[in-house]
Length: 187
Image (spheres, rainbow, N blue to C red):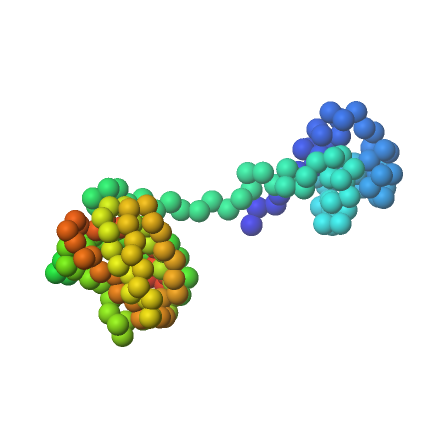
């Protein structure tokens, strides 16, 4: 792990504020020698000391750690390149996924032709779903509830309750779904 050096940054802020080592040390409750050593990266201060110094200098502690955030990987799925599953009147297109195991979330487009449906009255699973209707209309049967949804509507629900999404027609339903944990595109 790389050692983090922020002494020079603290010195720059102190000098811009036209504060002496003695002033900062006095207000932060530490010795002038310690401030000097911290600014020269000769010693790493305790968290309490660092917080006292940043408060004295009038800066937020996060300022010292800019650019030190861990770099994550970007996963890109270009339009039309995601995996596709066809099941009768239903088309699923994988768009994105993130995480692993129970924390994995998948995003896919769901198209249902008129008369088609997804799920079942006995159908329930762990997790949650978020759906956004982009085109067409649908009926969501969720337990004992019946909800009619259309373009621009969004839904969120616990997936453990049996649920069915039906397209009563006459237009194709196009929607976007976020499901966790991932169920369709698990690889």
